[in-house]
Length: 552
Image (cartoon, rainbow, N blue to C red; front, side, top):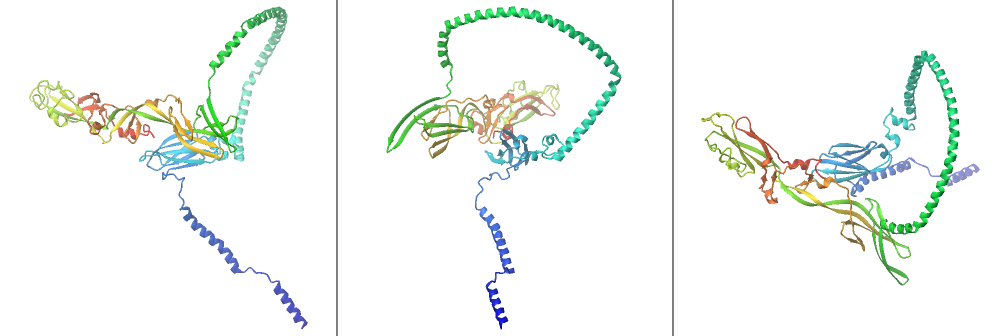
């Protein structure tokens, strides 16, 4: 009975100290819950990501600028005609290609840099802008060689390889230098006796020359000392006389020199900044309200550099600040039309007549001019062109009954290549538009506004008046070059033939133009009865499509 009671007590005590056991089902549940959460987040993350619009993505599909350790790689679709890339001060213009590598200096790749690219689409007037921020590369990442000079300058990148390369270069050089020294020693060894003889002879001459030099120097020192003593006395006497004369002249003209300097210095001073200010303040309920009118003339700093002006009261306390930052300087052309043009090509048609046949009678052929009506070419009379006639050099033309010269009547005329009308214009004057940002800061209040300033015009913004006075620009020959446009694109008009001119826009649209007689030259007879001429034609479409002439 006692044993059973003891066993019962032990069982009761054991039941009271019983702990939770980690079973297999609990382990399974603990492992499955994180996995379910991970899968749920991975499914929902693309859904939520697709809700937000990509604000930094380029509108040009396929226009990519990728940073690498050589510079940047530019990827462009087929419709891109050209690409301009600017990384800091390194700008370059590339033609449209699927892949283009823009190699930059290694010194630039060691720091962070920004690249901006402009992609010109053939179907779009304004280019696409794509910018990328490139991180700095470690110097060791830019060394892409195992046997080069850059590796020797940076041995810490590849110590073992650099040591091996240095030993590979120095060892052959030392062996070569040792061989050269040994060869020189063997070559000049037979001449050792001759060298010793000349050495002894020269040594005797040097000793004799030193003795003579000591004697000459000793005599010269004695004579120079005597001359120096006499000259020193003379110099002291003349210096004393010159000092007395200088003091007397200074006393005579000193006052006049001071007055003259006071009048000449203000006249030659340059005004850097002109400031005028008026202030009106009043105190109400312990608060001071001030109305300040200030005008300042200053030079505008280059693009990106802010011009800061502090607003102070009469006691020197800062009330606020005005910041003016230049963004860009644009030149706007004031066009002057030179001529209205059309793209054209010149065709030639000719007719042969025997003597006394048709219009080939008398001296009619020699009297044919550019505007002469030729019945054989009557259907071309209204076409823009000129007529002519060539007499055959044969005494008896083939197929003709009379032994006289036959006639070759011809007319060359212009045929339009398209329906577009082109305007050739120049810009006698240019207007400067200064695009800048104006920021006004007063206490905790700050307001920023974009303003466009034009020289001579006053721009008002936030009780601030800005008037550009003058702009100095360097001479640019391109500003005096004529331009060609058809309303959508503009190109430089270099060597544009002006043989075909239209009086106005309506005449150009109807091809009612006049063509110069100089458009075609050297008209001559070729095989058969065909006449050909050397003519100038105008292909304006090709000029606008040329990337070297087309303006962005």
